[in-house]
Amino acid sequence: MSSSNRIALFIDGANLYATAKALGFDIDYKRLLTDFQNRGTAVRAFYYTAIIEDQEYSSIRPLIDWLDYNGYKVVTKPAKEFTDGPSFSSSSGLEFVGESGRRCYRV
Image 1 (cartoon, helix red, strand yellow):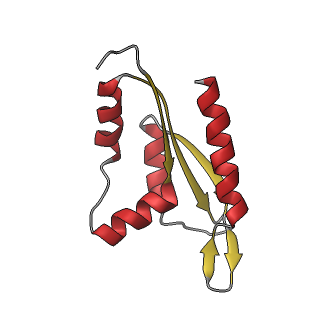
Image 2 (tube, rainbow, N blue to C red):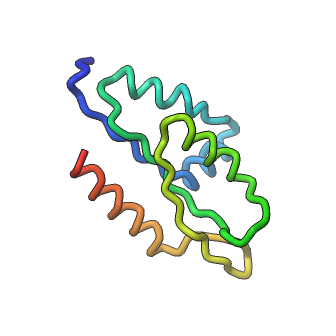
């Protein structure tokens, strides 16, 4: 592929994680980013996720830190707490879509 192809990668972290878990495999984020860099000029790689801000420890924090250190732009949003556990509201998903659309236009 031509290196003049500009690529922006937008990852919905919660859905990618749930899908990978359901299918029984792990995502190699370094390889994923390298693969897209080999297809063209990877301008940016975004990883969107929700986090519970007032938790002392979050199991996703090590991944977020690793992604941020290794070339991803991590975009977080506070998760809303419901009686059956933390979750996105549907408006949060729409906000992520809208933001990624605006970012894509600028890339």
